[in-house]
Image 1 (cartoon, rainbow, N blue to C red):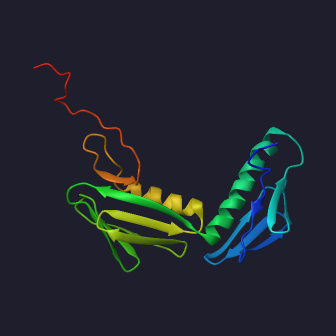
Image 2 (cartoon, one colour; image 1 turned 30 degrees about the vertical axis):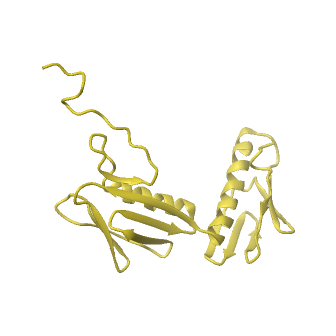
Length: 182
């Protein structure tokens, strides 16, 4: 049995879960998430817990078991607490600001890079070199953060660019490194 898949998911007070075949809708204080799951996985609600079971021990069903449970758990966490990704902007002259619903980034290009938040994603800019991305859907938050980071990924020589908070960027020596001969 999958150790992750057989763990029950506790449903906190104020969260409403509807199961319609293999479509699950989770409604909470932060919003509503709906997702369709593989028909082999049986999702049942017992009291204030969600359980995921699989029909047999085929390799595909074993893989889907843990995945389905984790996706359901992320839906419950998303509508109660939400998800957040933090990005740091490093570099001389690199800065970000929020104008209305737009994230305006000066990243050393000849133009400003502008990205808009949508109804699933909220953007906060507490300082000119910090971006916080908030949302209920973990996949959408991570994807949007990856798209922002892609506008100027960190480079290995000076470390300039947009990186996740806590991300380690492996630095390289320049042309005039220690081991070079004159």
